[in-house]
Structures are given as structure tokens and as C-alpha cells.
Image (tube, rainbow, N blue to C red; front, side):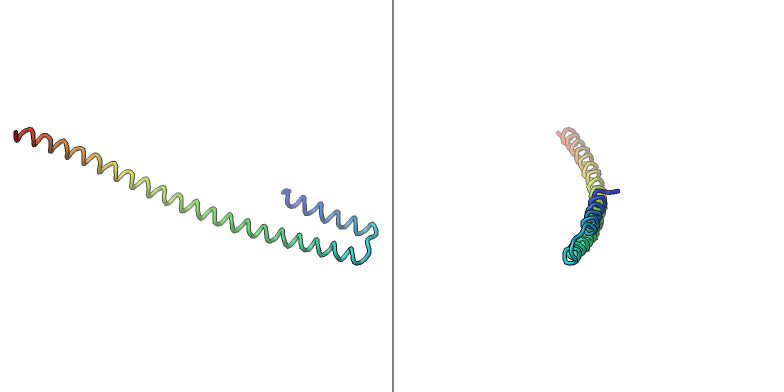
Length: 99
């Protein structure tokens, strides 16, 4: 059982016990309203958590896609540097032959 469920169960049990001990009708109604309010708050929090999890998953997907693109661009840049260095060497060799 999660902490939230345990807390909610304990609160509801407390409300029931207090209600049975001898609260007047107004207090019982107040406690019922409070319990309903807490249940709604828990439902809202769960919904917000689900939304945050979806956003997190989307962000992870975008991150993975960006990382793939970065890796591809890094590989391409490395190839370009190797080609540049090769051309520099060829140019230097041609200049030496020309002299």
C-alpha cells in the first residue's frame, strides 16, 4: 500500500471512529465533507502525477532523439576533420613537389 493510501485510510478510519464515539450531526457532516474533500484532492493529485509522468516520458523521448542527432552530427564532424587533415597533407605534399 502506498503512503498516500495508508494516510487516506488512516484519516478515514479516524473519521469513522470519531463519528461513532458521539459527535453531533453537524460534526459528522463536517467530517464527511472533509473526507470527500481529501478524496477529491487525492484524485486530483493522482491525475497531476499521471500528467507529469507523461510529460517526463515525452521529454525522455525527445532527449533520446536529440542525443541520436548529436551523435550523428559528431560522427559527421569527425569525418569532416579527417578529410580536412587529409587534404592539408595532400596540399603540403603538392607544395613541396612544386618547390
